[in-house]
Length: 516
Image 1 (spheres, rainbow, N blue to C red):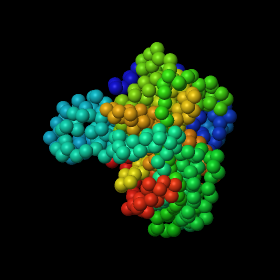
Image 2: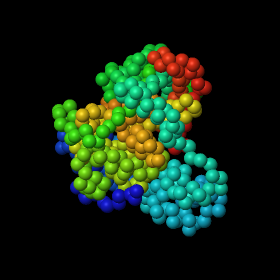
Image 3: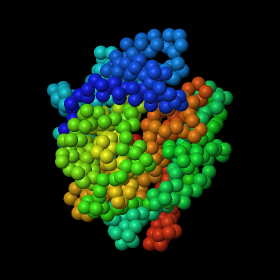
Image 4: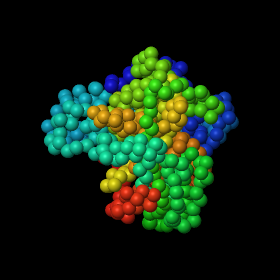
């Protein structure tokens, strides 16, 4: 599918940036009472300069605004984040053209400049012009081989790209489908898993003796999806588990930094995860009655779910005259699935993620999910976010985002547009539109929500939560100041006698970078 390149109207762009300004205040822990109180227009103007690559001008405007007497704390916070956003963008975009060529030549030794220029002009190397200098995204050289069949064919060594085991139809998908149909229930094929997730702050990232505060993602018990949750232990032992009502649930930990030593935090827990499958009959699907409970899930939520002119035009192009909600969902699901996956820049640097996914020519799982959610909501189909980690019976794990949609009379059913449509797999084509595998643990039932306890400084990830978060009294600790790890063991599932001989553990598993 070609990227949808029609520009948004100026009004739509302004709405994105105002919404982004509002979200940034939430990210810093400051809720905003009104656009007037925060100077949303001023922040939107600064955000526009940042988006357009005019960092020096944006910095001047931020300095001038902060120097004015009477500037509210909320406005100061949002402007400060715009300065931080520029810093984060410069961490993601560090490569010059020669450096990109050098990295590509590791796989295409005889790459010529004209070939690079052709691919660059086609938008295959994500870049920004910042204060007149063209800078390329750090992952653009490796992303090239995800985006271009021509580039893949030019590689000296034709090694396969690394994808997860659930990205092609396999025995587990058939296990879930067959069990659901045979047992006449949607939640089947359970897996019992023990997880240890850690967050380690770099040595001397904060002064010795200072307290580091850490939040590590922790699942909620969700009937029929993940159950029998048992907390095992934590390092340090003292911990604070957020309530079940927290939509981005965490375990909160504190530790004192020691000179010359990394500061390590970890949690261990067990849970039982189920696959799901709903045998949906399109003829039975009817438009949902939008109750007060469903109303938020058909509404816009700036800055990332906004019904822009381009979103509306794209929807009309894909949906056409279709009226059946399930058929509409199929069309939109298939269209978003055609956007090629590529490694993503940090979400906190993007003004409107669904708009970005529509126009960039590529998207990762969260970007695709937000775009599909936006399109479904525009068409009156309730849709919501979910995300966490995927694991395997082997060595693969990864961050992953997906969602749910509401189809009457079936209710809420899963959707994973990044795994997408299984072509040439009879009976499994639409497995991930109404079902999912048992190899995923959900941490988040929404995006961009407050932690319990709340962070005092900016979040590193303003949208999602899979790696964790950390800070000290001096400010946020960004991703370049710490690392995380995710290990798991698949345990015997007592409720599934057929799997009583499953090994009690698998080898230790550590995360792979997304798209590695």
